[in-house]
Amino acid sequence: MAAIELDGLERRYGERVALAGVSVRVKEGQTLAVLGGNGAGKTTLLRVLAGLLRPHGGRARVLGAELPDERWKLPGSIGYLGHEPLLYRELSGRENLAYHARLHGVAPARVDALLDAVGMAQRAGDPVRELSRGMVQRLAVARAVLHEPALLLLDEPRANLDPAAAERLEPLIGRASGRTRVLVSHDVEGTMAESDVILRLKRGRPAAEDEELYR
Image 1 (tube, rainbow, N blue to C red):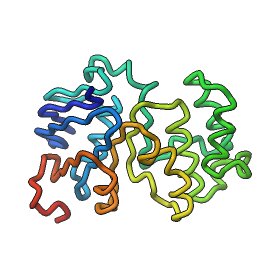
Image 2 (image 1 turned 120 degrees about the horizontal axis):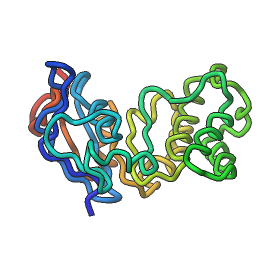
Image 3 (image 1 turned 90 degrees about the vertical axis):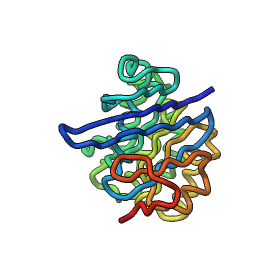
Image 4 (image 1 turned 30 degrees about the horizontal axis):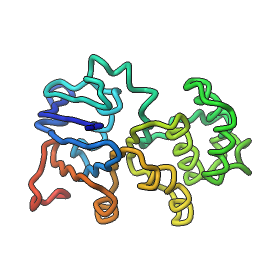
């Protein structure tokens, strides 16, 4: 069964075309790598898949939901990790995760387990504003997987992480998670190595395999 089906997807910001003619199919459990330079439309694509932006043309089906009409079905099934951690800076890491747990009907024990899994149990009571970028990223990963989503949308998931922290998070957001993933990263070689399907974008449009993406 396909987890993601895009056929001629389009998205605009006013007159500016952000995505055009994007078509791809990703099966359940597969990883889609989205490659491209700045302004290629990678983050826009993730936000469309998350139901945060409406497509303006083409067809988009995610986890069986047609977008945009059925986007209300998606929030409990998607874990989104973007450039912003989506954490309240004045709250502690534990308070942030507890808040999201209540939103999703997740048991408090899951919060404790994840704080331990991401290596933040000792700093769980500190306000987010006092934490390093790497620690905030670990909490953001915990938030994204808190509700056991079927689909992970990951925008530079290893940003600000040292190798040891990145390895620690692998069972949660890596191939070992067993989840369907859409992965955006500037680490082209590493991203391609852990992906089943590759989508190359240039200025919002699909690019040929031999086309230079970063100029």
